Length: 194
Image (tube, rainbow, N blue to C red):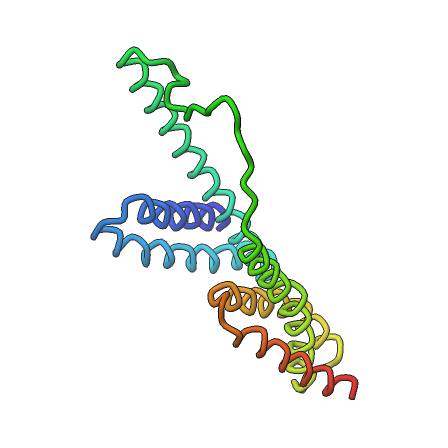
């Protein structure tokens, strides 16, 4: 069963990679088929080694297979570049960009630096604290045992923080993300400690 799961995993990641590399009309069929194979491989991994290890194995092997495909693509492109270089009489290093004698470092303007610093403050401490407290409040409302609530909170906080960070980065000039994070932070703080 593990061999079948691995074969389905390789087929799924391979089809997804192929549809990404060859974005044409045919890729419309390959991407859903690849996702379907990944779901089937998850099912096969779970049958082979249980639900806990099966989920871990499908994610682990998918990442490793994807990196191996990227490495293979890099090697093939490097060989292709090298063969093209030999055919024209150029050296292997001729494709590399040339640099001038002196290089200078250009610092960002104060306005751009302030905007990036503000985005960092919104995304890291503000979104992180709001996500942690808001998730804790939501999980405390569930009718579960305290240990289950703690475990679910530990798994849910990074997901909620990632979604909040994505929203803040997607709208960097909007004041809605920081205001929403502040509101969630205050309400959650008052619910937990007030």
